[in-house]
Image 1 (tube, rainbow, N blue to C red):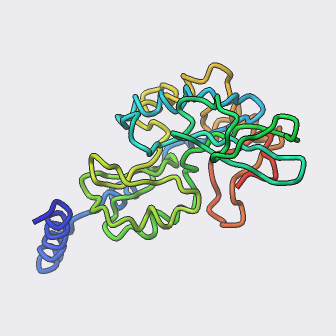
Image 2: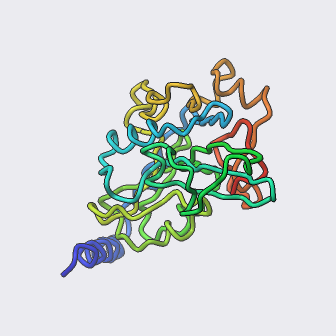
Length: 254
């Protein structure tokens, strides 16, 4: 029996075992978190696209911190390069999630003449920790859940690797961990921020392009940015209400 099959059998067995007892119920991680009293913290993230230079240090730091091998073609966070040509074409690439920077003038095997570039910039991306997360809604076993301070987590012990959450994410922020065989995504380095630390990517960025803060604290620098500066979110039309805000977002960003 495969690991996935084994876990499915265990989950079904636990659910069935709970029915006759009536008063006994096996709680999923989401149910456990819902029972915890709300905290005065709501984590939010700001990305300043004006400051990002595409160095890739954030991606490397994330992979190292969260034990995602550098050589595998998946990452919790990544950096996209956008090149707007004078003829209106938009070229986008993110080789190796941008971990090694962008040193080539080729974009998707297209040699770009610098004289033809109207505009070029970098956009770091990560899980948006949505207020209305579709990934949580589709998980059949409750392995994906939202904490009271607004971060979407995955319980690897409960995840059966069905992939529904990966398909439901409109931002492409989820992937299948090739080693652990479960769904994977950015967690805002929850193990760090819950201990008063910054995320690995924030600490690694030498230009301050990434910031994390408590949106319920009016004096938090991130809260002040969101309240006082012109910020935007990715794919607002989906109604997921992302908690990752962008400064200087170009209209060509997808």
